[in-house]
Image (cartoon, rainbow, N blue to C red; front, side):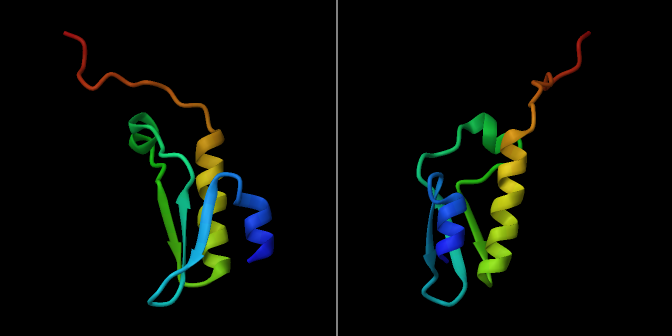
Length: 75
């Protein structure tokens, strides 16, 4: 847990789930635009290793350049 907190603790609050497993909640909510690009405010994992993989994926998605795509096609 210390390693995960060291890597992701500046962005996420990481806790053990009451029913088992682990979860991470963003310290600051993600924008609607970020959510539309697959980012999340909460990530869960059955194990710390699984949660670490999901947070790594989230970090990679955050660091990708985003392009705005029109919702409707031009006439």
